[in-house]
Image 1: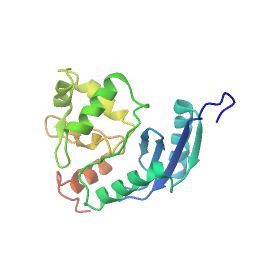
Image 2: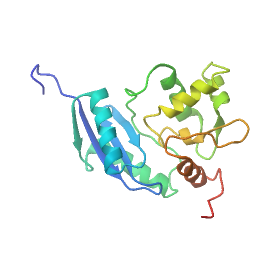
Image 3: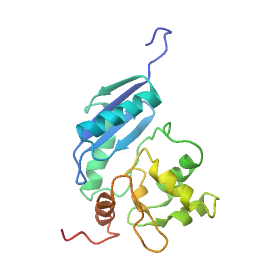
Image 4: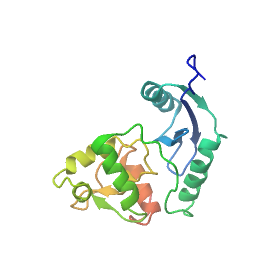
Length: 184
């Protein structure tokens, strides 16, 4: 409780090893709020600073937190090839407006093992011609992997960009059977 008797916002976080490197997961009482790629100490510290600035409250490292347990379990199953979707409460407070609309459509409408073009996704949310805006939304995705921005590709068949790096995008698409596994 804070000085006014209100429940203080608490964000729990943990770093989890995966097939694409360490991911930092953060959650609030509302759900998973952030997934961060390549969570080295420096990347993690920057992410925690951004979360503190955006969400306020206390940030607590707590890998055993019930708020994170199911997300960790589902991510491990995903990377083991045993899970093809996520069924988690998500806290959308780091996304708003058009970006949130696009990310929600992506999460619900582009299943495991499939891809969608930036322009096609723009059309699905009523903004034909908004491919560049969809690219911006993908770049702002606070919940990558769980909200699968790696499944958004260029209409000409190009892989497109990716905040986690193109090698990470290739690995995720290979895991889902969209691309062949890299030879080296």
